[in-house]
Structure formats: structure tokens, C-alpha cells
Image (tube, rainbow, N blue to C red; front, top):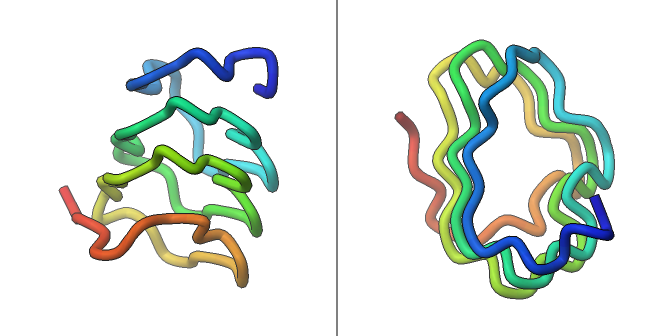
Length: 79
């Protein structure tokens, strides 16, 4: 979503199981995101260049974080 670089906070309100590589690439102002229940995989570089990202809340359904899926801050919270 590069054109959405003005987003500061987001809630994903659709049902999905995989968040693809670079899904939130260059969302510079994204500061916090809650990944919904049911998501099992974050592919690599999901949050590439999200410099303002400070908080990621993951569901307990996450089974795998691919290498580089974290441009994520530490610590990561689990819902």
C-alpha cells in the first residue's frame, strides 16, 4: 500500500490468513497495527520501510514469521 503512506494507525477489517511480502511497504506514518485473528503467516518484509512503526500486535494464530518479516519493532505483543 505505498500510496497509503499517510496512515498513522490501521485495523485490518477483512478476513485473511496470509499477509504478503511488502504488504505495508513505505507506510511511513503507520505507528501501530493489530493483525487480526486467523492470520497464520507474515511473509518476508511485510513492514519494509515503516519507519514510524512502534507497535505490532499479533494474534495467537500466527504460526510463522518469515525471515525479514520484521521491519517490526521489539517487543511484539500477542493478543
